Length: 486
Image 1 (cartoon, rainbow, N blue to C red):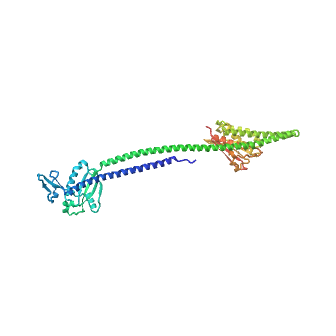
Image 2 (image 1 turned 180 degrees about the vertical axis):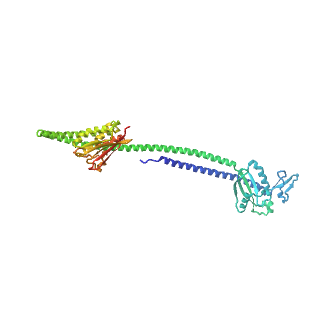
Image 3 (image 1 turned 90 degrees about the vertical axis):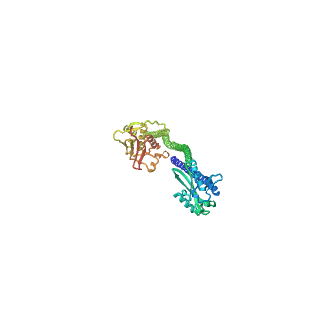
């Protein structure tokens, strides 16, 4: 079953969520900066419009007269104006204040209390104090080319300011003071520079950005927590589903194996057991019907045949019962260090009569005394089955060899013969319970094919492997591995 790479998807989703929050933070900071610029422009524009309104009122009245004092001295640059200075009927001395003079005095009064600053400037000033500096001159030249607004961020005496500038256009009321400079109605006469301190606005903007960052950080943490929680639970659900599916698959395999085992049992009971019992019944009936007619030798021959058939049937039942117990897990498993030479000699002694009956030589080529870590009964069963099969499929006068080799981790034991061998087709079936072939031996010996399945189960129980090398007509070599002694 294909596994889902949750780590990969977690990284992708968290990355997308982080990018989303980062974009939102970027937009929030951008909007805060835009709002800051908008607010400072509004304040500067209001300040400028207020000053223009004062100037317009004074200009439409041709200026205003104020009492002469130390702060309002007669303007020497207006000396060309008739009645610049007058004396009232009460004897009070008054002097004319024109819009420029008034604007300068208002800014002097307000700069300490309100922080806003203003300045009149012109390319042809009456008062040299109003002459432009380099930046102001650039703005005035742009206004003469048609521009109507100039804004700039500047630092004045270490304090940040926003500078807002618009041009003065010559009106009819302006000609009283400026006609003698050659201005006509509609000319750019100068400009009013309004400077608004931005420190407080910057504090507000930075506070808003900080608050937004904290909010977005909180939202990001909550989002990450939710994503991890959802992905964790989703992973658990998918893992549980996969386990359930694997359990179902394993159960289906086991059910399939049970069906295969059942079919195999039915095949054995229906065919392999019927044949020897048929032989027993047939021979016994034949002997019963002809007992009076047979000689002693003929009777002994039939009795021998009956005995062989009974032995084969008993061996067949033993294999079936042992294999069934193996499948049910009822055979005890008690591995310990064993002397391989002793076990091999014991198996050879048991099977020697069968080998002698076919004039087969069994040799044992194991150097020294090898020790293996195995269950004694299972090891004997494996060797006994392999050697018994070798005897069954080896011709009269053949040879069988038991060999072994050992490394630090495992021991390899082999049983080889020079018998009939196994075809490539049958080699693919001998360890498959669903299609184990039953082959007749060189002397018409029969079997169920369960012996090799027992060998495979017992070897794998020890953590080893069993394999076969064979070629039809050239003998076979079965080898298996067992753990080396502990």
